[in-house]
Image (tube, rainbow, N blue to C red):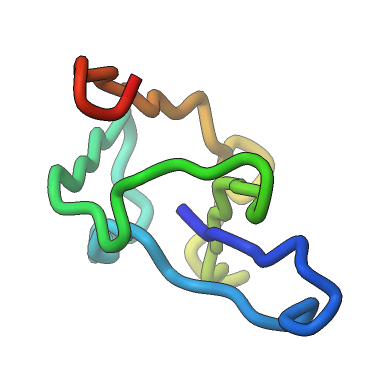
Length: 85
């Protein structure tokens, strides 16, 4: 999960808020679910930042079955508290 500044003075500034480790799974069938419960800078501020998810695939053409490789989905869960909401 990436946070990107919307302020002109910080237009090229981004923060890596959360990430999951590589699966290390090569050419294994089925689904792999990854999660990360620790978020850097966990407060959302839509007036100053945009947020997006990024997924990187490192492909090995020799492994085969690349046409079936993909991201099925992602869940981002927000909790609003009385203090912040």
